[in-house]
Length: 297
Length: 264
Image (tube, rainbow over all chains, first blue to last red):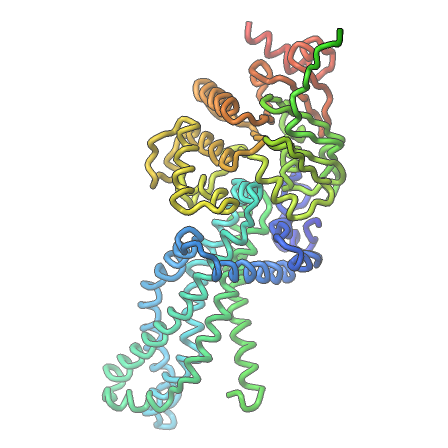
């Protein structure tokens, strides 16, 4: 299977500018999986969306292996990824979330001012944070911080033949490089989302009590009314979906790169762009589902 | 009186009619190679002659248009595959019988030196973490790097040591064949000689076949038992050094006689 034309064009690569003929094709990173049951996954033709779908399916397969494997989380690389993707994002999450909370309270009270309804601004902080802002802000922060790094690292591994070395040893790069990231994000992103929720609310409290002049007790009463367990669960469900997007899209960009010096930077840029679109798109789809299907809200 | 029976050494690696890759115009055509156990053969040719592509096809990193690859392991059992349509299980098994040292060593930068060598052990054997660590340390001392700090990162090693670690990793699963792509490219002559010695030493201990892919003519004047000269994706001449020195073939003549003149 050769490189699909649209992939070459959209990556800005001149297909003739590859004299060694060693360009890694868009689908060649998906070496055959062990086992006949998964062979059908490799049958589809290439193309960006199908490439992502195939990578997701393969990453899920190895994720299942990771869950049931007896190997420690250190040796499988999951621990390293949790450190890089999860723990490393704490500082950014902390500062950004409090600021977002302040922003929400200010903006909502500004909107409610003509109706003299600023008192209700605390209500907005509750369910809106848990359902929407918490998961979205956490996901976008992780995208901003990590997606370029994920793509860049995989792209430079491709350029330095490290991926070839893995394959030549009979190891699937998806098993060792993508599935651990997916596992790490599935654990870290919901945790970060909960943290983001709490910090946004904290920021909202600061804004409400110190700048808008409402009492603490009032804030918490308003807030308690507006937040249900349901909202938190929906928010966590979104964060699980976002984990898959953030693990798969930058990895796909990094793995599907050709051997050009500029390709690494291009892969990183594309990773950020498509991860942002992916997260926002997934968020929109989930919101639409909950809005339009009656009884689900 | 019957003639004494001379047993030909068992052929460890055999490649027949390899043409590929399958997508686009083929860059290698009708490659035939045969490397016996304990022998060290050389594929010599200028850049872009297709040497690396031959190596990639043998290991299954490229899908071929046609051809077969056979490996005979230490016990004499033969495993072969049709390079145009190989099943995952067979390819996986073949890859455990071939050790590959890539150009520039291709060690995983995100892992420490020891972790790099443990990787194939943890994947293909049921060694525990401790056993894998011990085997990795033993392999390191086999290539002349004993007493190495466990936490040492790949980037902290010299170029020669990186190549040695790559060789140790290639030897982890006790392969029957070791392929080396430009093993001494970029090394100064002293380091190159050291690496050559290391390769010879490990081969004598391990009994595997060695196939070196190189554009460096000096390898032809070394220990290569049989040399395949490649140009434009084909083997244009082959033989041992004496036979090639007598050859009239243009490229062979240019490569070898120029070098021989330089050596005088």
